[in-house]
Length: 49
Image (cartoon, rainbow, N blue to C red; front, side, top):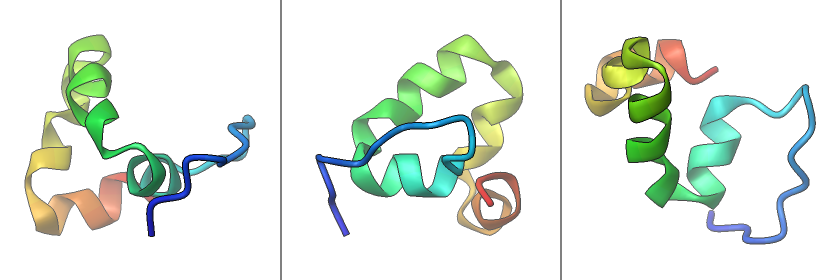
């Protein structure tokens, strides 16, 4: 579900953002270390929603 035209708003969920821009995973992890959990598929579902 790559949607490069996703409008990013304050209500945009991390899961939606990563679905549209998977390359942002490393950027998010670099900005906020707790986002390292995004690398684990099970934890990703709970963190990114």
